Amino acid sequence: MIEKVLKGRPSFYGWLAFLGAIITLGGLVYIYQVRVGLRITDLSRDVSWGFYIAQFTYMVGVAASAVMLVLPAYFHHYAKFKKMIILGEFMAIGSVIVCMLFIVVDLGQPQRVLNVMLHPTPNSVMFWDMVVLSGYLLLNLVIGWVTLEAERHQVDPPKWIKFFIYLSVFWAFSIHTVTAFLYAGIPGRHYWLTAIMAARFLASAFCSGPALLLLLVFVVRRVTGFDPGKEAVRTLTKIIAYAMGINIFFYCLEIFTAFYSQIPGHMHPMTALFSGHDGHALWINGWMWTAAVLALVSFLFMAMPSTRDNEKLLPFTLIILVIATWIDKSLGMLWGGFTPNTFDSITPYAPSFPELLIGLAVYGIGALVVSLLWKIALGVKKEAGTF
Image (cartoon, rainbow, N blue to C red; front, side):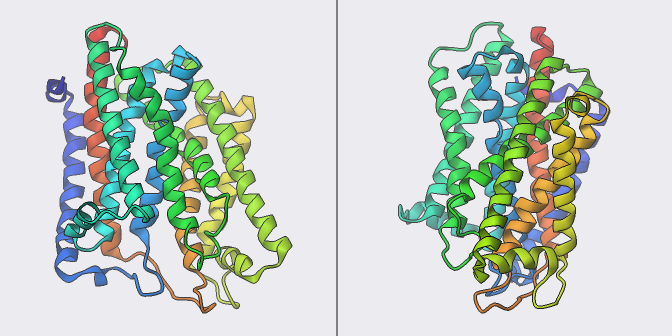
């Protein structure tokens, strides 16, 4: 099936060349980072996680979101999602690769990754995060390729693959739960020290990931004519609406708990995110207010059937939803945890230009993987008559 990549429009190869240029530019900056160290970033002793880990956090949610297609299709026999499932699984592969690469670039020296494997420590949450991410990547590779091969030959997938499909559903929940434990297990950071952290992560994942998938499907439909089905689109938008509502509700619970209890450690990170600290405004304040407004607007548009089912307005709604969740879950989550620090003061941090270029290259690798896999999947669907 790999030969499908060799048959495409010039615009497709132009897109691949564009991604290649971004990856090359960021790769050169990363080589420089390996040589001189993480001093090219604005990380410090007080702010040890930054832009890289922020993107890792968000993309784990995007990877886990494939379960929102697999679970209804295989557990509830909702056949309308069958056309999009392979696209969700292949997007999950690209997302997990992006997650792993952001961990690698954050470590400074790439050979440090081997320490996790050569010296496994089961009492470390990072060790289990590596296990669940690697397992989820392998599961989606096997499931996606086997089911696509069966579709190519117009036969039912082998029965043994169903065990791995069902396993992938539970595994998807595990990858984001373990990632949430990375944060919630740090007692010195009040913004993260909450039992609802894993639930917040999952709710955010199950609205932002499907929203991004649906946006990409709309792009593919415009370029290739692939039709996911109106009923499938409407059902997925309902799932996104419910998940976004739960996501907002969980955040409101955090606000109530922090300010009704009047515990300073829980209040200060939230006030710092939205209004600064000790009278000093922070660069993140504008971003957080933007996220709050966009989250409410996107939820209102998704909640009302008249706007949710309007396919001209839907892409705009999905875009602002993705932006809102990205700001909250990546920028807000990291800066909220480190601001103020354990001495109740501010250590300034903003991603440096090299960090942004390296991050862009990592996203470029993910986009390249998804583009190639989707090209194969759509080529097989067209050949099999399921396009």
